[in-house]
Amino acid sequence: MRLAWVMKTSNYRVIPLRTEVAEAARRAATSGAPDHAVVIPDSPQGYPCRHCLRWAQPGERVILFPFAAIPPGRPYAEIGPIFVHAEPCERYTATQEFPADFREARVFRAYNSKQDMIDAAAVNGRQPEAVIEKLLQNPEIAFVDVRSITRGCYTFRIERI
Ligand SMILES: [Zn+2]
Image (cartoon, rainbow, N blue to C red):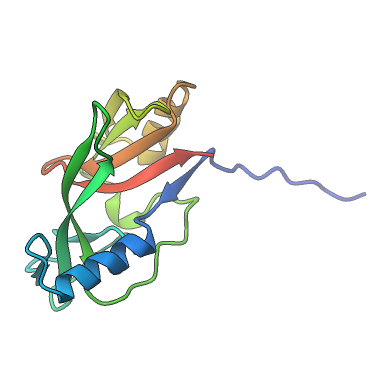
């Protein structure tokens, strides 16, 4: 008789910034676009790369540019500043796991399939997985945007599978 193990799998996945967006930002910075700045991190936890979902480290270079997490044309449209590594980095692949570097100081904004914000929560000492699980109990919620709790900057998206 074979034993069947039931794995507990999450009902969501982590969506890092698309590689095409990171590459376009690197090209724009190289060509001197005024809204793309090359920045050298001066602290180990102030410059999150949205592509590899790690903190960029002092000595590395990042590109600062505006990103439309919710595109124009919607009531909750939102464009804000984000960083990506200036050098090519590997897109975050552990999409079943909440990124280890961003377990704290995040706020979760929950949206329906029409990209309207219908709920929000902060980590506040809880496990981020528990906060996400609670938000996704509402079947109306299609995705959750994870942002900095202090500066409000978009970090990554959690999408219901
Ligand atoms: Zn990176």
